Amino acid sequence: AQSVTQLDSQVPVFEEAPVELRCNYSSSVSVYLFWYVQYPNQGLQLLLKYLSGSTLVKGINGFEAEFNKSQTSFHLRKPSVHISDTAEYFCAVSDLRTSYDKVIFGPGTSLSVIP
Amino acid sequence: DGGITQSPKYLFRKEGQNVTLSCEQNLNHDAMYWYRQDPGQGLRLIYYSQIVNDFQKGDIAEGYSVSREKKESFPLTVTSAQKNPTAFYLCASSPDGAGANYGYTFGSGTRLTVV
Image: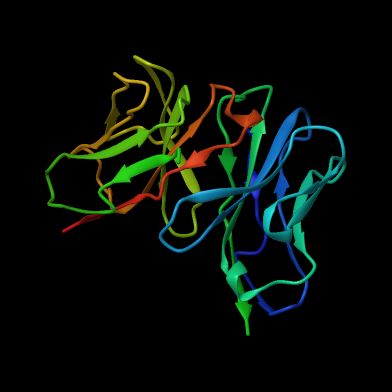
């Protein structure tokens, strides 16, 4: 079964520094990939998604992610973080072979931006 | 503006009681989903519905029930059979059953606490 790993449960970073949140998934065949952000006591908001085409995907709030099929990774990056980026970030995957109608979420990475 | 409305925001339940969480959307989406979120565990799928009058069990359906009598509404009942119901519950929707193509739109969640 498809699974998603987010290696870092917590990532502290200073304001205006770059950040990378790591995501790996278990199968490289026919997947769609997503990053969501969750602010405290709120629902999730879609940051970006990879369906096909260019492996570098740009999203909202200055975030981008790169799809790497050989490494089954979809890491999220931002060149300069702001205090307002403090939130929980979830990587998610849909396996088109077995569960096209569902999205499987990783455990989340808590990003804390330090002033 | 279109979106998903979850109510109530906070809910307290006594042991042995059934409670119903409301989820309403005005996005004209076909598919709706219920997730449970616990700290450090990401999101786990409880039930989902791709069309009115039809729904499927997710990964952790035991102790929960749903109905889909109207396109706009997908209420979740947490029954007394659910042994550990304290959690944050999120409702989501997507334009059709192939939710991966579009990503999900989430509500703002209901925090259920057993007292």
